[in-house]
Image: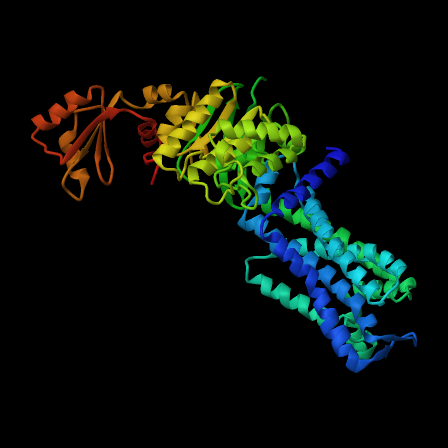
Length: 260
Length: 307
């Protein structure tokens, strides 16, 4: 089973979701597109009007919307990837038993994981691109930086997607989704999204800075504000490790769950 | 070794529980082979091992001459699997279910479309091609699953309880399609706990109980070896059918007492029934029938198939 076969089979798994798009599923997709936009306007622009400008750790001063927008991009990449790889993935695995059907073909568990992740990312990158266009239109970043931020936000999605898949294989029932939702919300609020992490007491700040969404926000914000440096390289490494680790564990766990 | 499936001492354990306890099986090209047994006999576990989605815990297993542990994807490429629980894709149409599935085998889209249309006609679902899966009846879903199992033109088709849960009419329609496949030379392996299904479809079968094979042969051979030609079923108007066992002694070869009826194993059913009446026993109902695999199973295990 050579690599080309693996890629082809993963693509077939992803392609299945395109065929399924004709259902009401596309409504869910529009929801995902709107969410960060609504946050940007309500908090970034709305609350931002009260706050005005905020100073960054480096001493630079930026508009609040400029500060919040990349965090919204990172958060939506996270939530889009997680909802696709937890809720939808779990539904397909346990409820529709789709993967049982797929595993009766030459498709292997890791190829299902790859295919579903590729699909989640395809969907996520459409969201991200649309949001970046909006950011450029609102003069929150430059076109060139937006172009650089797109692959970064896709990487964020990939990393969270791989994590989400691992979580799915550990989920016992629908009630566990409340916990995932709560976890996502905490990350969303406290990952340097609305205030710089430097505003927290030292201990909290350290905790915040090792969480994945913080690293994602840091990466994308560095790019859209044009202040990327060595720390952003660390962010990329962090997310790559998360992606590889998540995929590896998810593939293993799926094999144990489905190929008993 | 010409067998499509070759198993020796095949074992499947789940923790402390042994689901399949050392079975020997050989399935030859072109035959319809059955695993007959009650729920929990180890049939589905065996099927999952043959389908290369469940690694054996011990013993030898060769599918199409290959080792499932090493060549899983290559073997599965040549298998057609119809699982016990329908796992059709509810988010796709009937036609898309087949086309999408064909893509998992690497079949080009255009070929997949043509083959899907052909198969839908074969299972008499051509008119439902654009329909969703949800509104289909149980029988239609099962036929669609069978069509899906054929999409890669498999050398070997595995059917796990193909008609369980279907109404009689739907069952006959499924049997008729499976019989057609068999005539086309497709090798079928099926599990069932319905003796009539096994009798209808299987050239050869094994009777499984508690993870072991307790008998093997064609339906006719098994009946010949383990039962009499005819059976008289008697129901007596009492709570304990067993009280009549003694009074029926000597009429046939064997008397079997079930909770709701007594079975007499005899060569000549009508003659035996006449003898029952001559002994002035008056069952509330009586039935003379040919021996079936159900009787074979009862004889071999002391239990009925469907409980």
